[in-house]
Length: 354
Image (cartoon, rainbow, N blue to C red; front, side, top):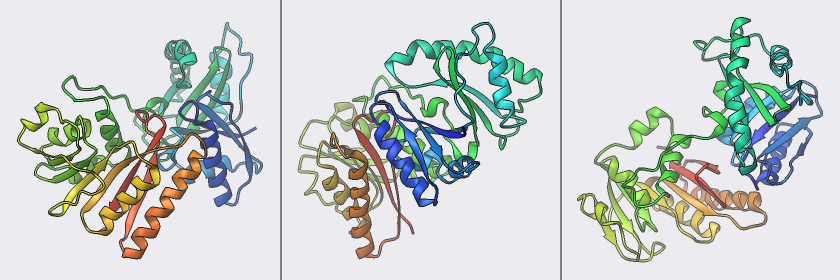
């Protein structure tokens, strides 16, 4: 039976399923989710035949909070013969599409699946070889569907497809980033990933220019400030804690030792970023106030989610932001995403539309 396969962070299967259910309902569709805890994926089946691809086109994983990747499959292939797994998988892929732009053989992002990922990398070679021999691969056609083969074990897999314009551009939905050796903390990767997820290459070029101004609330030790300094952006680091000396020596950073919730900038800035251990609703309200008061053009902020009702909490924070900015008459765009480098949190991007 046709279904949607969504990858997510292990432990957030329930949130991913709830979000898919809400999106389907919004589109006037009905279905059900199978979400086993700590597996790192969700299977969502629609009751209406032939509607999965339409729904997938409406809910790109780039616009979902908890889903890293999303593709359409015609169902699980079980008990694949060890002597020839390739042939039945190729047949299943060919039943969905005539030609593919890419071939991705993937598995869940869990500790239990690390060994299986090694198998996937080896298996991708004979699979690609057979598809190429049959003329099914056209890497130069960027609009052609991408083939996905999602292995649950070495003898069970979901083959399927996604369209590049409506799916994550990264293998397994994960942008692979390396932590720079001189960065003050690994938290620096959160901001780098956020820019890659929320901004197009053109937007990154336009919105992260040398000479711009930024404020980093809760900055210590300076992982997020470091990202601005690397781009030549002058930054006010607000935190009672210490900031890495390397950043202060750059000449681009002013350290203000004060409460981040009481700090007000002396002038308009291009960016406000915030990564603090604080109640999510309070952080969401803070971000909205910065835009409403005209203190910044855009902000990126992290919400540390509670253990229960995490999907609900993100919705509540969205409502808080909407109410604040609508009262102020500020047009805006808002997106949330649980990034690969997040843990029990999601990252928000809020931009004032000029």
